[in-house]
Length: 357
Image (cartoon, rainbow, N blue to C red; front, side, top):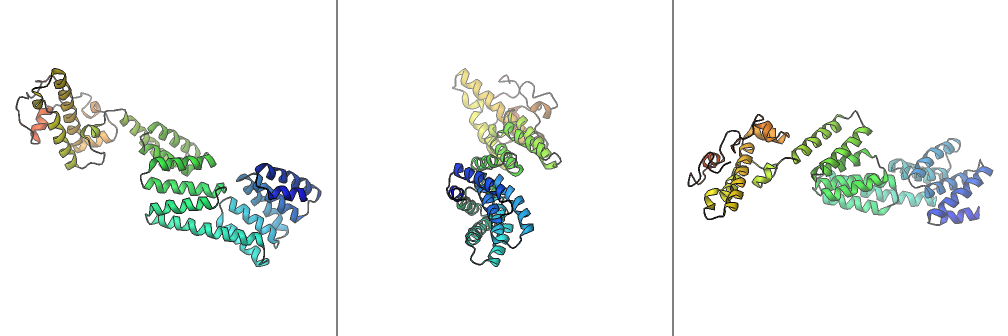
């Protein structure tokens, strides 16, 4: 018994496994000993973090049916509940143990730890609910540091912190927390969905599709996951086209006014009339760029065409599979578009095919 207790008092995993082996042997010789059962369950939680706690929750319930007023059994079950992330239930068990024995040292220490963890965790949740994401991240980080070895609790904390970071648009950092959570539990649905959303924002569309499809395997009846898969596939298709928003130098959330302003600025910069002294190669580059700017503006300034573009359709699909043909987007010459929006006028630029579009 002494060597088993000595091994249990050490911090190494090897010592915990040795303590478990010894207490298991002792338990076989003393199958009715509640004190041996408690020590064996303590060793089990140290030897098998996470998995051991779940086993203790089940095993301690069997012992408590025989002896519901044993503070040691209540304490060890409380530790098992805590190890599986059930803080409220764990606190109730420690409180009951202390009711039976107000001086029970193990329950006193655990109740104090859990109250602090619960306080910090709730502060993080309150901050998150109020939109104070920086504060929420700080509180979740503080909570993780209080007990970095509690896998089940930290699984929730890492996932919550990832969500707070996502809300701040810190997608790379959020994905790191998702990866940590998935390292604890590889098929954790919430962490998997959050990581997929991060990948989508980071334009890793194939990675997002992979995560969403794995989530669909876990919960095949959830309609929102199916919708997310479709959305990610559309975004992948869109990413393989020319980005009309980037052509104009605007974001996907740009207003009509911002699109018009950006178009005029870009069209002025690359208008062929500004290239009279340029080389043939420079003129060709300007002509191509002017065409692209006009093409982008024609789509993004038209509500229906913009909706089709945002839904993933190609330029050919938007223009009835006919394309622009001869450099005219949807039948409109880029120079005509430019003049419509207060451009430089005809100048030396010939409408239609003057530049061989």
